[in-house]
Image (tube, rainbow, N blue to C red; front, side, top):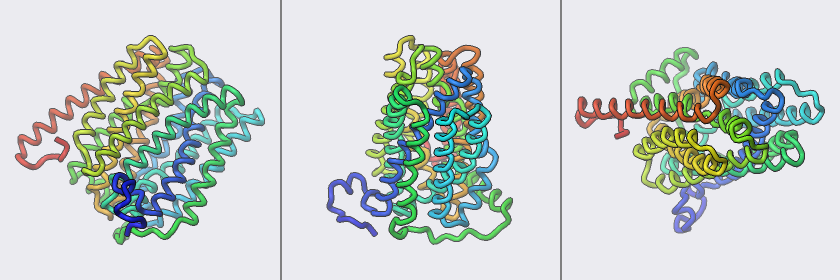
Length: 421
């Protein structure tokens, strides 16, 4: 049931906001995500200050996502049987404690590189459970009717935070140092935890109780479901490749700023903000189109855009042009990823939601260790600009192959196809 009048123009454009539970959760996420991006930027710059090594920066990023690779399938099976609100309270609390611990270690001057590796791993374990739980939690707040709009709005605030957080981090690091980036992130969790504890009752909780099976059987059932659902299976394959090769910005952009373009902390923060600005525009593009349901064409446009603008960014020699085309790269990334998320969530049966979203998290985040090592290693040898070009070319070749397969399958199977083209 909606909580606000249907005639209100704002809620006609953004129908997911007509649900009070979602509005509370969405508002809390705005603050928390700004804090998260502030910490991400501070951590990447801190690693480069400590080591001056793109490879070691990539290794920290990899450690943060190794748990997703190792435990994501298990987490999805658990999530389908657990109350999602309580799970989120636990994961958000752990992440808050880690942020305050990092602030203390940096402020006391006792932080060492190996500590960053350990804390990145612990944060990764929390995220392995937190991300698919949050993805699965959205439908309980808005119902299936407004799910696409809610996903698009979540992408919008994620990328608004991607715009604001790096700019804040760049200024803070330039004036006070990286400790304050971690401190701000720690405090940002307080609001979202309060909302999770006191938010009104969940109006659209799915009345689906998965059959109680062994953990291994639960995982196998989820994987079989994905394999037998072509639209989900094809999107997952695309996401796995592109997240590995085409979206390594947390490794490549700081290297591009510090080593290739010879910029400082503020210049790096602003580069990430231009990426975030483009991503925000991409999210708003998906929001506007969300009333029409999932957009397979946008998915393909975003994927090809990732290939094209990776190449274009890599060919630039000036700071301003690099920043300009990073915005287009950010737009492409979010148009692709938000469209992928919507297609999967609207297609999936409620019984398998947690397991399918855990696989989505696996290919979106769990491939980051491979992608981070890939990007960090190539950057060590040839620099960030060459790595951007190589990544773009590989992406375009892969997507041409995907389109060829989709068209061939459509021709072979008549009217039955993956639903993408």
